[in-house]
Amino acid sequence: MEYEELLETEDQPKDKRKKVIKQILVVVCLLLVCVILAYVLSRVMFVTIKVDGESMVPTLQDEDMMLLYKLGSYKHGDVVVFESGMVNQYGRERVFVKRVIGLPGDTVEIKQSPDGEFNVYRNGEKLIEDYITNQFTNPYLRGPVVVPEGKFYYLGDNRNNSSDSEDNRGEGDVMWGELNKIIGRVIIKYHGNSFFDNTATIPRVKNNKLPQFI
Image (cartoon, rainbow, N blue to C red; front, side, top):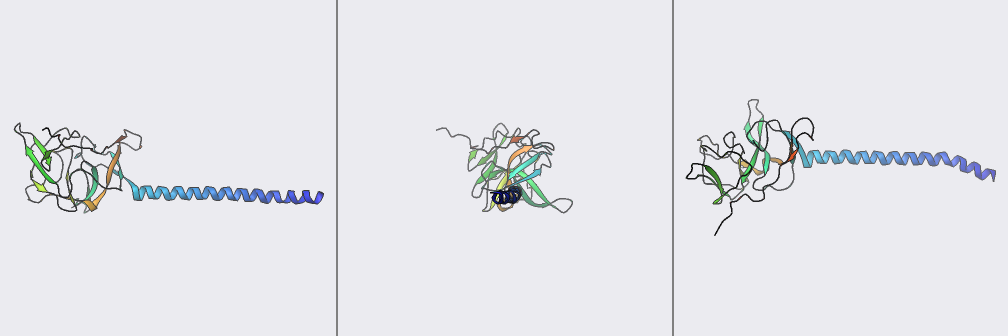
């Protein structure tokens, strides 16, 4: 009887050590999973970029932070960040944030109404653009133009202070965006150092065509 009790006493520290080691391994595995998940989310699915300029006012303000979703397809009205193919004064490629107006096969045109206001038309239908405060005063390239395969037609919400597809400066060529150069779609904006400072979502445009009445 005394021998059996002695064996039980000697086995207890071993069992405790095994339990502690098992708990440590579980914690380490959980930490590894969290690190891998954070890497995937930051590199594959999401990225944050700061707004530089006022071309997307009032939707985005200068120095706003944008959370981009990098997966999925793009639709009319999406606010996207993309590599422009242009370089800045430091020799680095400029990154634009603009709104997708036309996709491959679309015909885009900027027409002037009798009251003098310019409006954007896609495939012959006037767009309802509740996200802007001012239309063009004198667009450079009015169209119509057909969006080529692999390209997209883009405009800034601040129509008179934006370098975009209509702004060819009289050179004749449309400034197309390239679909394969899109970094991601803007889904959330915030201002300041904290994600919770003035945070707002950037909703997708469901249907911005003017209703047809028969």
